Image 1: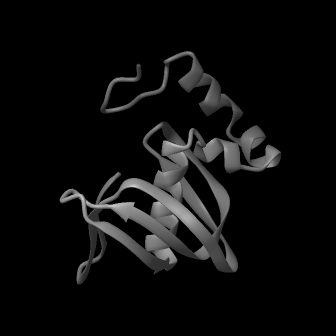
Image 2 (image 1 turned 135 degrees about the vertical axis):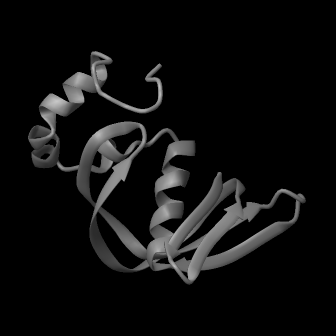
Length: 119
């Protein structure tokens, strides 16, 4: 996972996370409307824990363990889900999926409009 995200004009979240694994999640359940490049024009309210404890290697093969909170924890959970074969829509409620049905069908039929190719 490579992250290079401007969280605010003063705050940058950047890093390389190789074989990242969530060791623990804790804190409050936080519900946030998330989007994903894998699903253009789709967003849904996703429940994630506010804090996570993660282990990973960086680009220099250095091992790390650290706790992340807030938006950093959310970004990492989203991206680590991808490496585990879990997509944003897998975490959406049935009701959220129904609201997005026509957009999901357009993606399935490769009719979604994007600035990048859909394979």
